[in-house]
Image 1: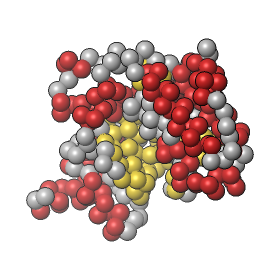
Image 2: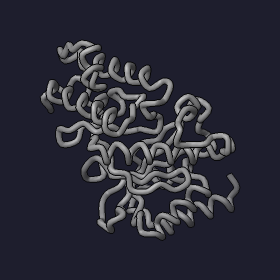
Image 3: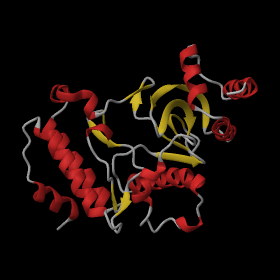
Image 4: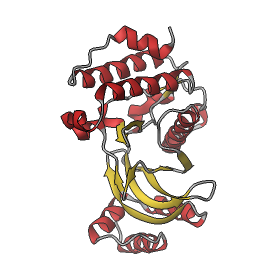
Length: 263
């Protein structure tokens, strides 16, 4: 990266009013955010959605998530999660199966380089459908380019743990049988009310916050009329059953599937 571009990135980080963080956080921002994304973040900041950027919540091959002090559409000041899909390194060709077959998007008119923006919009719209249906997901606030702003699930700038983070300690912090039933109920609402299948549900993307399960990472979620919807639903059910067997919960696959689908 050229020195001039580094100076521009640093200037945008200053404009975004970063909360007082160490040099390590600032270094991570500079490494994972390109200039186009920083300009998009600044536009969201100028519209009042982002008041001050905080620390890094998670980094990955496809996306990075940051904490921020922000505002929702009603003007309420709330902590938010800023999810940013990587423009250059994301391997979106792996996501074709989740995009093609989705009647909400006409991919014939979309160039390859714009697929990342479609994916971002898809996750935002999936979150909105789920949230409106009463599914426990982060409340979506705004999407722009490759950025999604959503409700932050956690406290004191620390994200709530996922089920995989908790591991076997889960049984010490929550009634596991009740939690299992609530996850199935959220899957039922997602299918019957939001008409979506998560399509990648597992202990890695279910957070536990105030004893409640929250579904996250819904970019790959598909409408129930998608050609692979039932196959994805069955995989989700098997993942959930596999995880909870560690805690002595032995429910039948067909029983859970019927409960979700209303068969």
